[in-house]
Amino acid sequence: MAQTTKRALAASFKELLAQKPFNKITISDITQHCGVNRMTFYYHFHDIYDLAQWAFEEEASGLLNGTLSASDWKEGFLSVVQELQRNRQLIINVCRSVRREELERRMCELVERLLKPMLDKELGDAAIDGEDWNFVVHFYTYALVGLLLEWIEDGMKTEPEVLTRRLNTVCSGGIRQAIAAFDGAKG
Image (cartoon, rainbow, N blue to C red; front, side, top):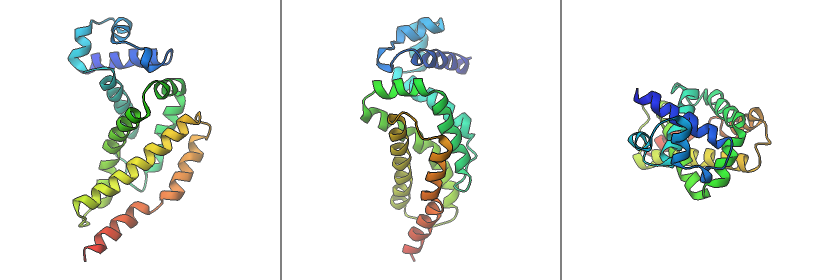
């Protein structure tokens, strides 16, 4: 029941985002649109940012299914970028309404949560220091977030397939090379 209510609140929020900027949406707007009271909202979420992060995380997790590895990340990344493009107006409304620093911070949290399991699979039995491993995770997190934010701010003009191909060209084998280099530096 709780998940159903959370999904209903998220759906209302996303419908409202397609109509107006993030900073113009209130909790009252969401609860009225959804047909629940404010206390129901606060039972599930701390604030609108918490709802937004949960909604986008659910959507991204559903697209990725937690089954990606470094060798097949392209399909998952392409799915996410295509979904962003399908929800273009909603995404642009969020980006235009939220401070860049806040947006970047929230996106980094989300991307890192999605990337970490994939990168952990790729790590395998390699013996890498925790600080070095965190560096690799942070590097790819910030690279992806920066790339996505620039793409969104540019109006999502580059086709998702082209963006994914370019990213793959730049990153192909890079994760494995970084792991091998850090692992070899210990020996």
